[in-house]
Length: 359
Image 1: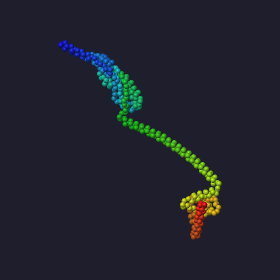
Image 2: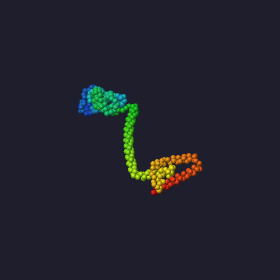
Image 3: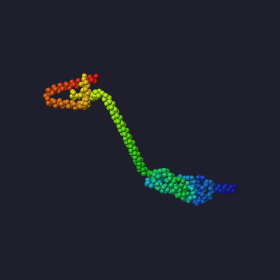
Image 4: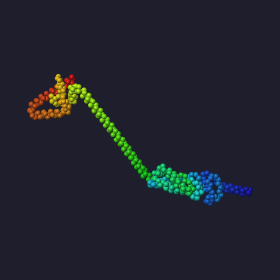
């Protein structure tokens, strides 16, 4: 009984001590065995490890690729346009011994603060050596590679390997956004105005060319029409001359009828002329030979329509002059007789013209 009381606690103590001396390293971790804060062993392979209980301790670090977001920072490119850059980095611990020596008891948090400082300084250095257009263009991938390569050397002192650096967002500061947007709108409006002006210029050239083509086509058509009309008139005159040349008397009679039709046009047509005028020679030829109209008759026919009112005025002036020279009563009788004689001649001519037209 007394021996069992002593043996059982001893066995328990041995088991507990044995368990405390054994530790397991996961495949996602790396471990350091420390003795009084001094590194005595590095366990990088997964499996079981041993330590001295109560004297040695195990510190574990993540062996996976870790991500770190960098706080937004302002950079000033070569064109002095301030930009707010938001970036992040991916890294992993490759040398746990150097990492422990560099950060001490601070661990991952202290290492990430150091890494933030390195990335911020290298980001300002690289982005400050180019223009803002390069940062906002497709060349940004090359700039991110330059930032990563510049940060790798400094990060190696911490036992860290910088795997990648990415720029998530590149914006203007809030106070500069409105001015930038206004400038962008002004540039777009200017480009639009230039495009509209070039379009109007091209349209004006097209219109001018179309107007010129239209004018040329119309002019050519009118020229051809005038040529055709002139040839047709010449042909028509030639046909008329050939036809009327065979019978001169019929031609004169036809021209006289045209002259009568032009002179006696309208309901109230009146003509004042001498009774022996050649104009009405065909009206006075009933029962006798038909005298030719002659040149005087043709001239009288042409002047008849235009000189109706002038003939009335001239007749009135002649009557006034005769009234001043002769006696009023004698002249009135003579004028009445003359008027009756003239009316008779006109009526006889009109009757003869009607009979001739009826024949």
